[in-house]
Length: 112
Image (cartoon, rainbow, N blue to C red; front, side, top):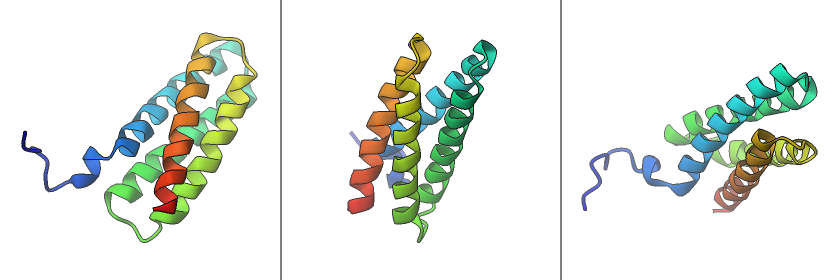
């Protein structure tokens, strides 16, 4: 099957899909954490969503800062996963899981 977006090879990278999922999960988790009164967790989730969005943007443009942003994204995702692992609600458990996957993918890409 031909890639209909062959001019945009980054769209096919698995870590790009993980970054998008992490952005979405962290954004949603932050909203729910705010509603539940968990402001510190919400702030970390918002930071993680923001760094994932920036990573997608820079990686899509083949930025000279790809290596640095991937390392930073991995660090922020790990920290967000750590914080969400302390929470007992489903949305934080799910956020924890996707953040761990995203951090792993970012680390691998930063080493490539």
